[in-house]
Amino acid sequence: MPPTPAAAGPRALPLRPPLPTRAAVLLNVAHALDHMFLLVFATAVAAIAADFGLPDWETLMPYGAGAFMMFGLGALPAGRLGDLWGRRQMMLVFYFGMAASSLLVALTRDAWQLGGALTLMGAFSAIYHPVGIPMLIRGTSRPGLTIGISGLSGNLGVALAAVTTGLLVKYAGWRGAFVVPALVCAACGVAFALFAPRETAPPAQGTRSGARHERATLARVFLVMTVAAISASLLFNFTTNGNGQLLRERFSAITADPALLGALLAGVYVVASFAQVAVGLLIDRYPLKRLYLGIVFLQAPLFAAAAAADGWTLLLLQVAYMIAVFGAIPFTDALIMRFVDDSMRSRVSGMRLAVSFGVSSAAVWLLGPVVKAAGFDALLLLMAGISLVTLLVVALLPSAPAPRSSRATD
Image (cartoon, rainbow, N blue to C red):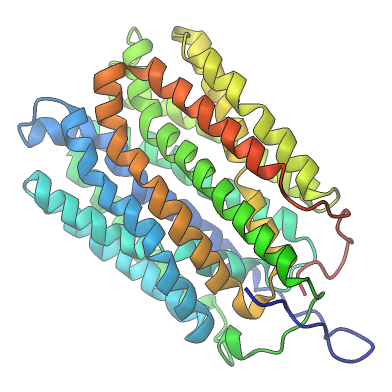
């Protein structure tokens, strides 16, 4: 990854104007929809398995792995197109592609059709992260807070998937759980087309600015953030796809009702999601490495404690470990923001996401078989081990001073 050249002349270029408020809001809504769509299947999997005549949800769960694999692998071409073709155009492809593929999922009649439609959805879902987040942070004077709010929006989508899917499965069937979000996503696409300003040129053709970093430092940062992102994505996929079934198994006294189960999960995710805003505020003030190590340090003991818990204790531990999981998410975007120029952020982000999400899609494929063979206690201990790997890798990050309060993204 080449270093970004220093700004020409005695003064850096003027700060690029941030997005209009309505466009920024729609981008945050898109992040929520992105995560919501990917988790509708995980929340409705038991109802879908019963409808397809399968013996249990574990048998159907691996058919969702293609969506998460494409969520990662598709980020590479999405990021390249975002920089070279345009981020606004790619976001329009995201909105309408997600809506169409979700409607296609609702029309499926067996597990293989479902797996194919979910994989197509995963390809469209890959667009948001390498395109939408660079769009949001370009020109902002408080990039950490912007990343934190974006992360909050994405994780509120996780919560929304839990509560709305539970209600829709109960009152409209599992197919309705895919149709309703599809209509909402298409409406957001129309609004984005109206409110998002047209780009005068693709980001790759813009003038570069920013501090110069040594090639060796950039290579080290890219390696660390990619390996850390793989482990973080594994934890994210294991938890968000498995928490519902974990509660169903160990808190069965009050979670037999899918709507109630969805409400409990939504509560867990909403509370945990606000950790990203707090982390974003801290990123604007303190060195990344120290903050990152502190968040990751909390994960392993919380997973280990949850392995032996049930009932209300388990629910409280889920809140705690999801705070630690969600709180670690903003750091990879913050590293890209701090070390990579805007003209190539979508491509760098796409490379990182392709590797991390591509590998972590294995979590969706493994979730059902691991739980079926060894139980949730083994899965939680596995996640504790993964978090320790993340801690060791983050320790290799180069130390850096706290960011300046202005011009953080240029």
